[in-house]
Picture 1: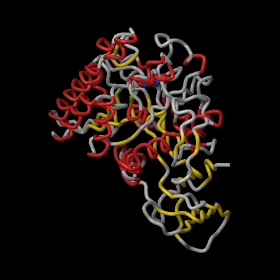
Picture 2: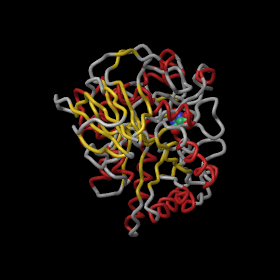
Picture 3: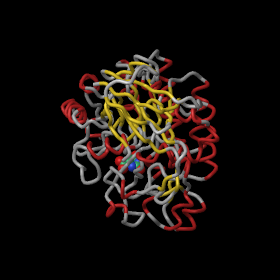
Picture 4: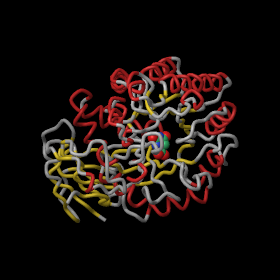
Length: 421
Ligand code: DOR
């Protein structure tokens, strides 16, 4: 299959070019057009985005999302690769589930799927899952995300074992007893609203513990790799910065919702803003942005966490946590921070950054590189219109906002995975 995309630019260039794709790779630039031709409408060509943290809810919670809706949504958001989280029903802790998800996703023609598997059986936090078999089946990381790893010894053993397999362990870093039943950031806003708070210290304390576990393993010669998910506080970021300076094999991700929203959003008591870890303060968001700039943060991940509208319409105490917005993550980041970060840095945080920490080949636009590509319209402002989402969660905190940077075309393995009508 041959495909030529005409009328595209590379980032920070005004030159209009053509790229030809064949057999899943980039065949060449500005060569005579072959096969089907698609007009790139003057958009900017970049490697397709890589998402290391999405909840696609399959198996078992397909009223919230499924592989088809979630991977179609990802492709519409410019993503060519998605790592899905294992907090499903049943939990992805069995090699047969990993294999069946990969097989099903391959037939869909949207973004590629790489499942994360649970670190512990049933995400029970107590018994390690069969990590080696899960890796052989195609799992790319281990995590009990959605739950916290309360048993430090189990995390120690999991990091050590996964490290020996060359695999990343990613953690939802919150101390469960300190978080208690907090439903939002603990501070003046939670006090004003009379809602139970979840203090920044719950995240920082857990990050501090996990970094000590990692340091202890490294001292014994382990190559363990700890990845901290959805980092939300200035203090936890500071701890990661210090650990990196000491040479620890730690990486972290930050989510657009923690960069663009604060606990002030909860003043209307709308559970659409309920997420774990919670929306913090402007000071935290500013610190996270600094972390993106100075390299402390390795990548941007969305934690796309769809729930049904009925669930999110419950009151703040009862509604489940999670914000779903994989389709608008790039436009949101580009519109809010493109000027500050620069396009190349932003793309790095959403393509090469995640690839680097996973040990995957660096995404490239050179001939011979995999044809996983996105064409971005960096000029046209368009309204966020949830009714058009491919995700089953057709609501979002950013509904009605005008954003720039929308994907026009996403190509995965040389095939069209999304094209804006
Ligand atoms: O807000 C969240 N929602 N945080 C998590 O860690 C889990 C996720 C979910 O599964 O809904």
